[in-house]
Image (cartoon, rainbow, N blue to C red):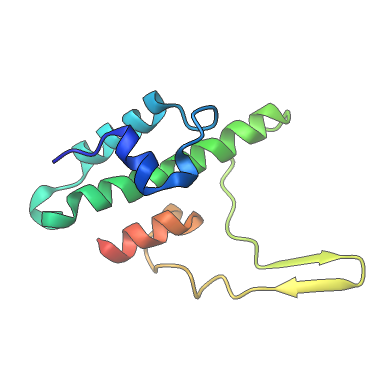
Length: 119
């Protein structure tokens, strides 16, 4: 079975906003996922893996578009924020807890870390 953009938006409602995530863009990432993922490796989890792959890339593309809309350069790679300060208050996080070793850019989204775990 191949997942449609409508099914992905139903399974992951955070991608149902057609302004931010047009069905054609979801279709693009799903098509690429099915070309890249091996059925023999993923087996019955292929559709889930394809959706996670698409969601991960949709988030990265949305971030790049948002940066471009603000006058910034799209596609600049950044890691997870591990600390933040506002005035005298600061907060830190251990970014290694939610990362999968050896999975590079897949650690930039929760969909990517889920994808890496399933792979």
